[in-house]
Image (cartoon, rainbow, N blue to C red; front, top):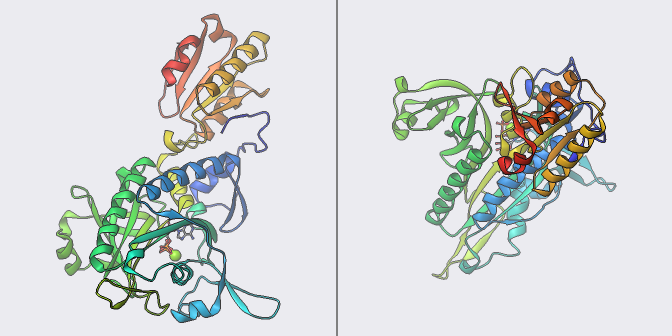
Length: 417
Ligand code: ATP
Ligand code: MG
């Protein structure tokens, strides 16, 4: 985003709220990225939304490259639909929020969309010619989570990217599943957490034998996984048995136990949704068959929380360049007319060069300005002051490096490009 900090509605805070345990939320609240409404309920403020939108854009780009098509389902869910798959009752699904229409008809607030997507596709899938295909959305999920102590990594209302695939056979499904797992690897690389993110064998629920979770190693995670660094594979403790280790081809002594957070998962649904919801197609051989399905989720805000946990230091947030709220944090020191003029001009020139700039044009002390720049965590800080202008220069500092250096103003645009 491009903005003068004197105009930004949010302000940084010196201290974190007392009731906030998670490091990610403490820093994001102090820096003005999120607002805590209640436990597990956070609003995204302008800076936070800028980051979230960049994460979403990367995920969207990879989904579009797979030929998947974006749509938007609804939060209100019909009771009868979920009864067909036996997922309406609170015994089966313990995170439901439920409500009633004026005429007393019960509705649920979507915690997932498999049922609704499957039923909706009955309108469009009837022949083998309609398959394979996939659809996805970025949509709100509402979940009555028991624990909400991990900041934005586990909230009661969050945007999820959920994608659903529809295939004619297990073999056709497997091809898409592999393409999707490759896309997930690219996504987490682009988001700056590829190095610590493992495709992890996990339980497949009631349907398939296994599913795959994408787990990022972090002490803030709620899961325990066993990783093999060399082979870059992992096993969730919930399925950690001799049999699974043999299937995956690893030995117990080669594995390291770590804490991790699930940032995404991919799931083979088989025909467990298409059979009860009657999503069928007529195959080339004239036979009517149930569609083979998969589902693939990522939580962009959980990813954002994990990135904060992995990158932040004692001074504040540190954003990887791909998802930073801006490219440059421009600091103007003092209000000498020549300094104001030079800094204003640099702000305009950087914007014209396609850079997103947070411009600190406030009347604040040097200490406060630098502390805020560190807290907000934009990758590059440029400072303009009377002293730097004497050398026709600005001071350049990278957020993740200790020292700063002088650079000629005339070189700034070329160097940053
Ligand atoms: P968990 O075991 O952590 O509760 P889950 O198995 O319920 O996760 P899914 O229903 O598969 O998760 O959701 C897909 C993705 O959505 C997860 O991989 C995660 O990134 C994100 N996600 C799930 N629950 C939450 C939540 N409460 N807050 C934020 N993101 C979430
Ligand atoms: Mg859950």
